[in-house]
Image (cartoon, rainbow, N blue to C red; front, top):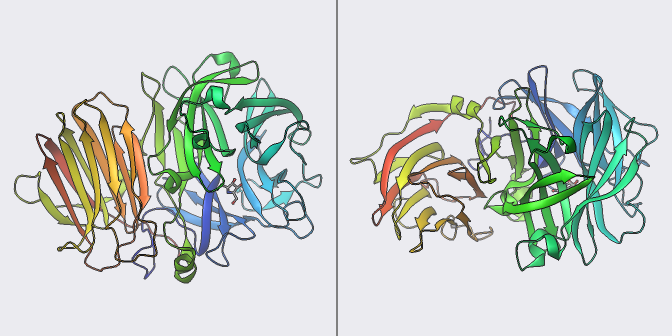
Length: 488
Ligand code: DQQ
């Protein structure tokens, strides 16, 4: 990206200017990948959200397209065109999104019809097509959509929550995308469904619900109750100030209900991979997008003039135990430019990189660890530390320490950590740095975060084996920034 701001990501998708949040309408059509996103081009604040749009042949290099949706005075989206999806209605592109209007007490479901290039959109005159949540439920909120075709009928999920009970997703059915019939909650995150003692963990509202299945051959498709395949529901658990993180529920879909068998966190960095949305590409690969939310103060974002970036798109799969795993899509390897040179034995190394990928395998005996330092100054001024270690009981744990990541104190410097469901040894790790972002993958479990070094010399990276750990196959690359139109 053409930008003078050393903290603006260079190979992750960012908006031309202003504010970006959720990925929307992600799809592949005629070979082209489309990414729409929650966008305010005017300023780096969340206000009167529009739908930005970009197109790519390889998920890495993007061409900006015209704004797809804008709020309309007096309409149900007068104050924002919030998150939604793109579907193909017999060749006609249709967006289903949440209208946001301060004049209404709830968000609503709205439609827009596109031309074949997806550049020009016309709103459905009958908007909103769903004007209120189902009667009889005391809901906490009602927005965001997942829409698919099943048995020649459209089905839709809308994210919601039932007060004092838990988050939920309401199911609907339609023949024409305009008239919808309620089918009740697909699933409710009440105490009985939750794996953790803390009910706040699963949120009081489920944002950005995303529902799909994996076939026995590993490919992915839209939900189908008749298939008997394992289904996955991804949602962003929202709780008044306590929790905002994406979660994954795996289970069985039948009789208009989703029976949860297992829960997991989507990303150990929580809100830094928020509002995820997935799509099956033309080969059946399940691709995940998410919003890499900032950790800078609102004031810092406003002054910078830009806010938000997307994660590098990831491929998702279910392992034999039903754990959802992820890795950057294979196309990300096309960013690899010059290899990094490592010092001496290859395990203790210092190199330079803020736009870098490192991959390694590590053999971990109990109480050993591998430590990765990034964005480090030569002294102890600034340093971001990732550690993958094994407890005495053999449990794997991934920890990111941001407490010394920047001399700037107007930041969220809290850490992230979580256990890794993995019995493998050695473990494969990949770490991708992009100026103010860090994405760690350890045996397919992701941890995404944001750090903002203040010093120009915070470019060091280092890999260190702790205790009996043995590091092998240590490799690294400088990653090329992608050509994009000028960014602020
Ligand atoms: N962002 C959108 C909402 C969604 C939230 C508004 C999640 O539709 O619930 O910009 O980040």
